[in-house]
Figure 1 (cartoon, helix red, strand yellow):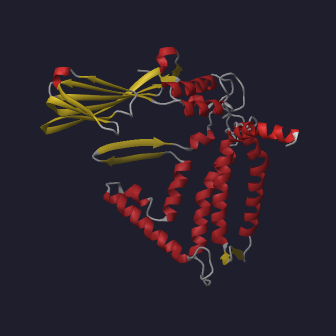
Figure 2 (figure 1 turned 60 degrees about the horizontal axis):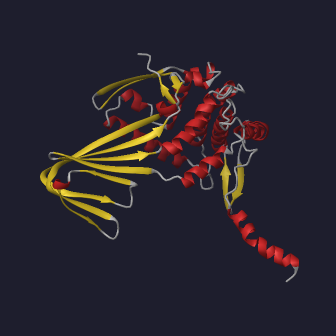
Figure 3 (figure 1 turned 60 degrees about the vertical axis):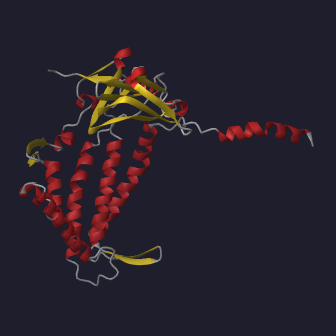
Length: 381
């Protein structure tokens, strides 16, 4: 074997290991990078598509025969109006994505998002610590399972805390709100135009992509939704807004342009909610953080919180057994006196059964999760 062959043979394990390593998150791939592509490449294309759609809609003889995957169909104005609604909605969502600074920097101040590599590596090398504890008090067995998620959640908290204090994070960088708002308001109008156009068609429907019977089926579906809402106790006024596709589009237009008060009684509970979506677009926030509830960043032990969920099972008969998977938990604590235990048996599969002498009639179980939070909400009261 030649010297070059020996070198290649010797380097083969290294080459294979390098190929097996997970790829690093691309340094150039930031949110602002994607936003720039959307602004300079995608939005201009959508503008051209909408301009072409407008020209087609202005044609009195609008009808196109297209073949897709060997299936031939006719596109009329109804389909063009639906296409307009889809493109406008897409342009609105993409424009919204470009308005604010959503970049997430690493806590060391670097703009690239390779912090994802560190976090993924931590996830792969971190086992969630779980502790199970049993305690017997008279005829009640208390079973507490504690999940310790602090190692992973503290890493995320560091990232969130840093960015919440970063100058510019979540602040407006492009004011596209007027364009977004106009697109959103045009969507229900375009859908109503599509419905009206399809309902009015008198030509042969055999090759149409959307036919009149599709709209008739949709009418029946909406009527069923309205009936279900009435059966659930929703008021006739609100249920009526779902009586037909056109009624629903009118309701969406109302929500987008006017204040609306949701005033219903659900399960005997009166619920009143007033919304005004128009203010989000006509009076936009220069900094999204100002729209959040009041909060304060926390540090040290104040970042560690415990959440608990408790549930109990009561039985008319006395149970004397305790079962748990010995292999599943890092630590199992049996806070029960030896004189209260009759026997303990662990199977080859790792399932442990503890037999108590007197047993219990109530089994109280609780899950407790330890996690790390970057901030806490402030209650003005």
